[in-house]
Length: 113
Length: 113
Length: 113
Image (cartoon, rainbow over all chains, first blue to last red; front, side, top):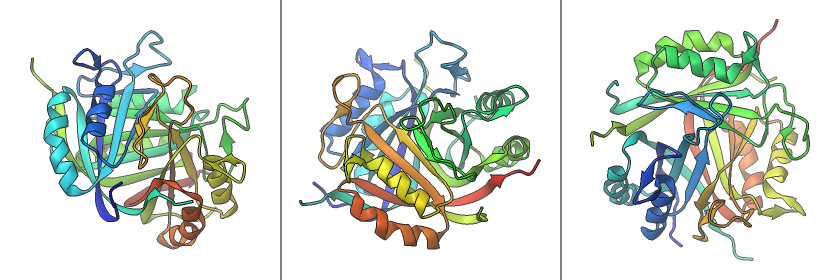
């Protein structure tokens, strides 16, 4: 396990649940890529409504048949690791948004018991 | 589609799922308003537990009958667009929290294929 | 209700849904602790996939039996209140990540009607 303390980067990737990459859901493909690249951790959130650059309203309530709900993938890692994975991840994203934010890591790890 | 690059604003609106506005769920009313105002995109997340300014604990586990789970609405847009939509959105929110954060947009768009 | 305006702190706690504390789910234990400590509000989000410091891939799709999905607990409060609650919360977290971000509170409260 890597150390991760102090000022780091929060990378957030906003895509759609129905986006595909190499025949699998894009978000699963990104999670597997990030796991292979040994990022410190990943969290995938699924929204209940929203719209993106294509400006479609995706709503689980209104459009019950739609599976294209918004997905946010979050990664907190060092600036160096974020710079390393971005050129791998960005070409995988077609319709979406990627943002970086500064965060301070207060705790990261697995306690010994 | 607008361009969206570099330093922008992440606006986050924390409300309850049962909040209403003009006879419809507040979060749907906000999404429709943001769509009409042509913001760059919106993501609506529903939490599984939480409490807000009224200090009630909303928990899907404990209070199975409650539908008042927390909702977060996220918008990334230019400072000018955020300043333009805030005076429209803020009066719609009664019990809640609205925050702004600085974010760096790394990618936004729809790739040509 | 407390006032909460201007520059404040967003605290985010990334844990697993199956983490336990004192015989109950850790995230519920943290929500109850934060409620007792009178933080301004809490939102608990459950992800659909992810991995953490232990580097396991948790996916609701792939591992249908797993309940160890990622949880994010979010708190927006004053720097003083965050400094006060962190020494209470951090020892409760074993496998996870805790981050702090600067946020600007635009609106917080319950409107009088």
